Image (tube, rainbow, N blue to C red; front, side, top):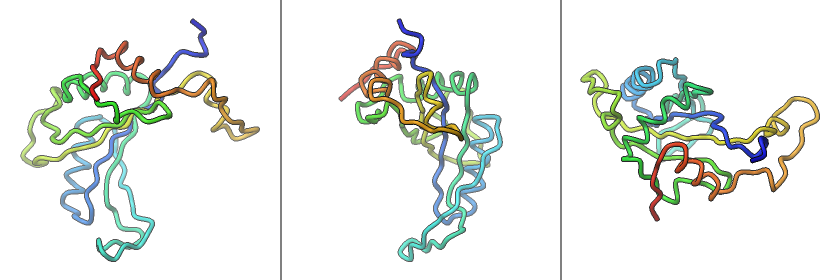
Length: 169
């Protein structure tokens, strides 16, 4: 197989949306810290939405990004929480994978913490190939060719092979 065609995991991003509830935001920050052993950051609104009582600059969620071996190591327990089953619509056309976990206690490595309560989270897996750096580099940015992009079916095959998941309709 061509080494440039090998699919790799670039990063895994965790996100917890809390709305305007600051107590829930504190719990989300604690949950992400316990799960990833990394420091999460708050996400802030950029638009004014009067129906939801949102204005620019309000903290409404928490996120954390893991890369390299940390990202690969945490995927096993996350997929176990989903019983190693993902749906077809968890994969997008660019080869990324996103799924939600309704309750963090479904993750085998985490135990119930009364300080946190019950909160769900979303996990997004970004897949890349070698050579994808050209679209993000500072100088002489280029587009990734259509033959080099990761297609939905390739992402599904990668996840089946690497993590032994099943994909349902």
